[in-house]
Length: 150
Figure 1: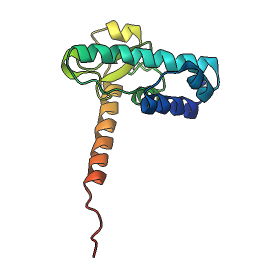
Figure 2: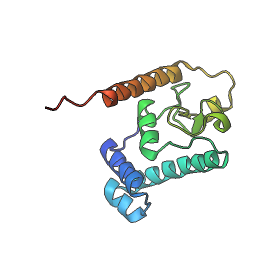
Figure 3: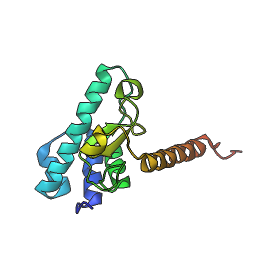
């Protein structure tokens, strides 16, 4: 849906996360175009606002720009609920004041679904199942004992 270069967006997002810097000139160099730079900065500011609020509420605030771009890509930059409209907002599945701003609690949504109390949750539940499966796989690989040394 979005005609952006996935690799350059993720490279810039990873640089922002690891360097903890937001130098517009460097981001522009990494992504190559003004449109992609604007996109990265818009999404960065979006999640920073939610993280700031989560910290003020003293709840988990672990969502990174890389996590958010991964979520957007999973839903093809569309609303997680209706899958018909491009996303417009970051929406918390459970209230932010109880579940925080984490990859497991944030999905993209259109304004209509954000305001609607009757959201179709099939796509979101499938996403959560996939996410939990991936996390379980990571834990299994981390728990494996190192090889026996003589």
